[in-house]
Image 1: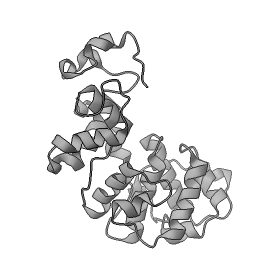
Image 2 (image 1 turned 120 degrees about the horizontal axis):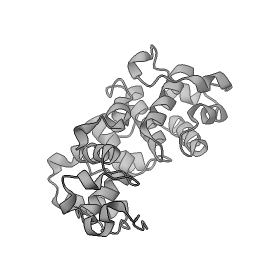
Image 3 (image 1 turned 90 degrees about the vertical axis):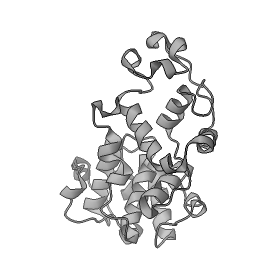
Image 4 (image 1 turned 120 degrees about the vertical axis):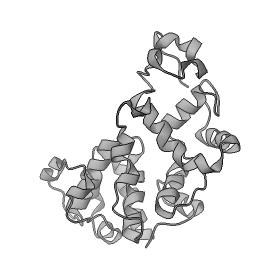
Length: 241
């Protein structure tokens, strides 16, 4: 079902938005992509990364920068999104450059503080979550991508919703805390699958089991869904707490 289309996560996910995980700046790009991705669609995040690449360091914002539409990293000749260039940029200009990323004002401030704080991306969960704006989900993905270190299962909105609907963890009324879903999954899913689980389920959520318009009537695992009888093929929208 996931393979019926190419999910945005496969085209524009954070793991696609850097040219290297072997250098501090390459790892920093992954971290920035994760920071910007929260509450933001993947293509919007990718476009913001491209504008940062094209226009950093930046002191004054120009409206013409908003017209940057390139969303393929190999179309950028120079990767100007570096720790040093963010340090040398004005935070108000950064805000406008990453707009319309969700909560762009706060994220620009976080971005500036992170660049002022680190010389390389931390390689531990504690080190990452101590950075402003970086939560457990981002930390887990960052360690996987940057250091090939699998410390936990990353839980985002797709993971939280779908894993609960399938009875894999949390509660079937979609009210569980994301950390509880992660804990439940980590208790029974073999660790060798932890890194693959997030992109697998997120892609399924993007092309098939979306929050508002899931394709229940054609779903091959509909009988395994705890919401199958409740949803009645989504004739009535369920209450999400």
